[in-house]
Length: 307
Image (cartoon, rainbow, N blue to C red):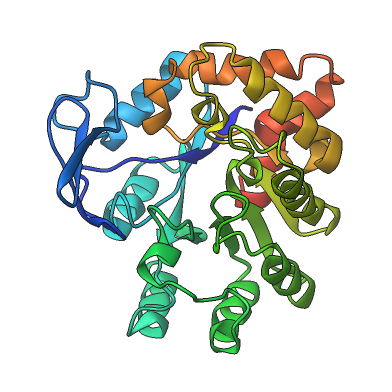
């Protein structure tokens, strides 16, 4: 079974970043504050990617399931994602949106638990489009968040984290290590293979920071998804040689049992087609034994996020 462990679906973009509110435009354009960017394929006329479009993409590429993630950029869509997962449980699993630093966060978490359709929560922590841009200086390991990690562990839910790029304030490897070690029953997924962006491997300090984050995979309850690697390779086209290098380096550090294939669609569709995003990983790791490749492409995601 093939599982995309990092996908998005939304009726419209209505979020917020450090640069201001976000909103769907037309033909893949998205407004962020006072500027507009081509964030999605121009074929998306209303700059939306509803569940029906995601399911069609899965069918096109021969992907069996997808995990729906959320973040501040797209905006909170808990009701939409929950309904999609209830309507298509064979194809979709969902993660809830939560801002733990927002007033009423505990009540919001209780509401997520009552909904019951989610496998856990995703915290988009990156500075440009995530929570650390909205709450500068905050830390994942601050004592005031202990209730969240205990609640997730108690309910056997997953914590998915986008920690941004090496060298930024959101790249809190030590905090994640402490959380994972203190809560062994909590499954933690770090997105984007730790974001080995262009230039990381040529910079000793950034490369060491990335390798240190990848070492989290030595803990028995931490995994990495491989989403968005082609986006870190400006000027390259399929099969994105720099992304292949990053993927293989990540494999060497984490091992096949700790990697979950993911794409970050629809945003990644500006870099290549959905079948190409699958073939990129399948071809780059074709040297693996079949059982290991199957684990990366779906088996690990089923273990973490459930069948």
